[in-house]
Amino acid sequence: MKAFGVVILMAAFAFGFIGAQRVNTLRPGNLAPVNHIPDFAGVDVAEGAAPDCVKVASYDKPLRSLRETFFVTNNSATDTLTGIRLSLTYFAVADSSMLHSRRVSVSCHIPPLQTRQLYLIAWDRQYTYYSENTRIRPSGTRAVPYCADIRIEGATFKNAGK
Image (cartoon, rainbow, N blue to C red; front, top):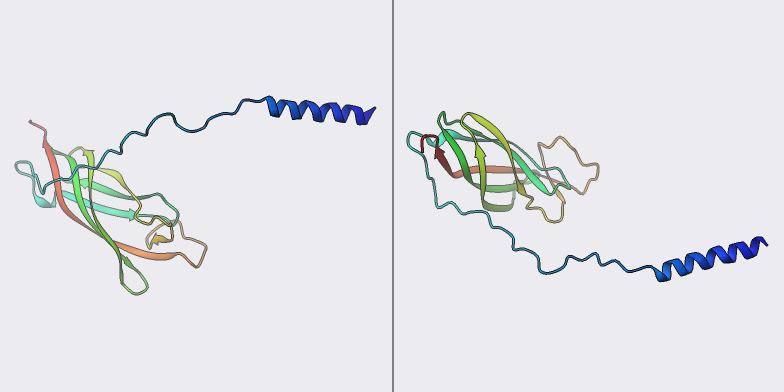
């Protein structure tokens, strides 16, 4: 009798799985195009803003992170920072060899005399490098530490009076 109950139970499961509808997990239609980061033509400094009005600090990228993060401070007393153009160069810590370099533009909204955390998509697509200053230390020995040299190439400000 127990064997008959087990056979009935197995048949119920089998017919349940066979009769179940398939679920399509793919997105319908085409994907939307990726919005490109605006390319700032240079420094567009508002009236009275000095070139040293922007400060970048506390760069970080843990080993398997999708993002590189850093803090940007707007030292202007009157103007809102709306965009920043950076030149980043990455060097291996072991032998100071250059690993990669790139120029990026980041849109932002940083009010006068305030700091915000900004991020970039990580340059390390294989997730084998980590910033030497990161809080999260990798446990494996194959991870390669690097340092990043960040230079501000330009910034755009929006004057509070305009």
